[in-house]
Image 1: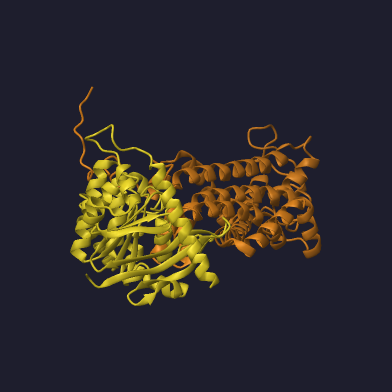
Image 2: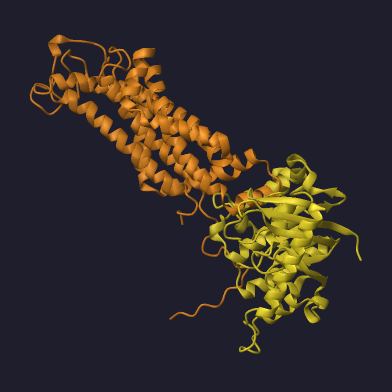
Length: 300
Length: 296
């Protein structure tokens, strides 16, 4: 066995000298790289949709209806994923569909996260009457069936992108509130919070400077998961015709249209379904990877 | 006798959860300028309650019923939370008990050490960093830059306690509350930490209230001692006096209970029943007279 000289107490960080920066750690995580890369590609496609799409997503051509994708008999050049029942290019529509999906994913999940976490932080840290009120509100809120609530909400305020976002925020802020409240309560018991109070830090400063960084990994993971959920919810609402107007391409709307002609033209259903599936998986994997590589204790 | 820096006068506290059971019984103690004052007693004696009362972080189920905590002519108990926050971190700092939990696991050492300097001393980010580096040098950390860039879990327990000590003394407070700062450390590290606290304290002329249950530890570092039992002061005096010729039966019992390496068969004895009975009677008599005074 190898003999190792005893180390003096001052030689501390020998194994972990400069810990790698956050960026380096993220770049080393395969989940973050693959899923994040995929979502980055989606973002670029959504922003550059007019350049990336081979055809006008709204241009109908009944002579070119239900053309199959490349590689199948009867495929036409210029329509790599075929066309739908009205002769519109499926690939172009899927690319334009990312705009609605990502808009909803980022704004709805972001707003739900912001509102839910703020309430959760306050409830978990200050406790008392505020905590009791917020917690009861969450309990009541969660007891309400979410699908019913969103359909009811949209029936009242009307369809459209804003309504979809609002419906998701109104329903899903509770998810953040619950988790953040519990996490905050746990962190508030820790000695480092006592130590911060003993230096004379005000309570809001402790909450945001000391506690928030500790729950950030959980929060970011939850936010990414929520983005996946938001994409699905938007697709469902589009599917039942409660989202944006039907002349804007959405994955949910395409799935609804494709369902009717699935026996003649399966690709009209398959393409948006695959896009939806891959996007949700990517958000979930990204959340998982971020949670792992952002946690200062788990990462070693 | 030096000029007092901290003067606790007749501090009493009760536990609300436990039917108003007294936790502190008219505790008075004085910590002079540049003095290391040991506060000793077994667990539950009320040592930590005193430390927390000074820092204004008493748990909600404990209430201070009377007394004052004089610090530089002001009663800390009568300050508003804003006024107290101004004093904490600038004039009074804490060296916490458990270095494994007293540092924030999600923040680098640099951020945690510079927080107080920037907020309480008005340092710029660059100045605070330089100062933090110098402080780590002062507590004999060999690779200050590496430590500043680290997260707490990458450091050993002794290193973390050095960081906490550096952070506390770095604020140049007039009083440092050391709440059992060596309890969570092994014996060899303990000794280094004690020497370090003593050296920093002497260099900066800081007063230290050193809370401990370990007589061996306080013997090494404290100038004066207060022995506490069930929230009542049993004995006060210079360390040498109290440890070599204890006047109170409880102090003698406490000393006898200390394990001795030279005589493995000695020590570790429970406090003799007669002493316990006498102590109980003393506490009961005190409570009765306190109740009588309150009625009359």
